[in-house]
Length: 94
Image 1 (tube, rainbow, N blue to C red):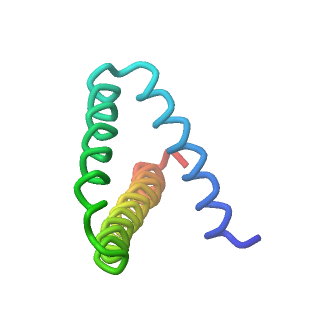
Image 2: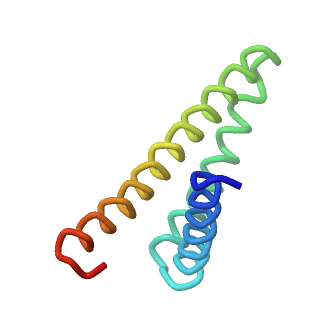
């Protein structure tokens, strides 16, 4: 297992713990997630009248947008780790 894979696993675990903590302890986040479920149900109902190709195109687009957003946020999170390590090295803590 290489450095990037190890870091990716660590980031995944940290983010998963953070998301679970937010879901359990942050009413605003929980409310937003509940609202998202309702909107998702409305969207599914709305696109159910489309033909398979149209529906699949919309679902694929939404999936790709979500995947790209996750990739961006993960990259930013990892960069934050790297920047923190550089800063700690610069101020001679590590």
